[in-house]
Length: 274
Ligand code: ZN
Image 1 (spheres, rainbow, N blue to C red):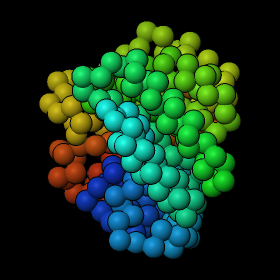
Image 2: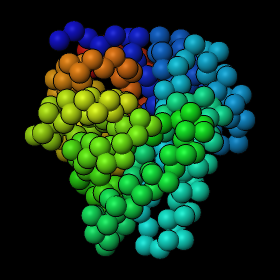
Image 3: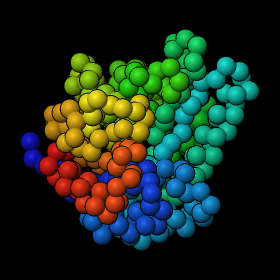
């Protein structure tokens, strides 16, 4: 399997969290990065439309806005609040010029996962008119089962595909993140099924370190861990996917390093391992 094309390299703003989005945009563009996925915290205090223009002026494609979701809640009032925040995210994506919002779907400690999944489907369905009006799609991101308690009741690609099949909307698809799904014995067949549903909207890469010392902020740079990235990309590309390969790394360890050197390492690791 050949290296991934540099033309498909996208980096999430959270990967270089110590940098302001303006700095990330300039540095990414100078390094030959072609896409950027924007985390909502990076937009705080900014004119969102102007920020979108700035990113495009650097030649960057705006791939996604991260993130919406967190639909399940114990009360109807709290579920309505979650929908309000998602509608805000849809408006932000529209202003930014991002065609897609990544969903971390949510879970409620103590609530059955089946009930949370029902609430997630209902929540997504309620947003579809807003998505249609704004020209923004939604991508369900299955999260690793270690997050099933409180972050997402969608823990396998099969579950995400089932929701896509149930919702039957061209506006709803999947964000496939290697960190969350690499262990899944059904991964190859579910990637194929996702593509058959025309739902493979985004592809995120990083690595799984052993031991992982923090459930959230100890992701590895590609090549530092045990995810078979070339194998998974082969399965993804076998479906015809030619979208971006998005580098999404949350790492307290790597955020503490020189970010210029880190960016150079990301580009090299992308060539060597993705
Ligand atoms: Zn992701």
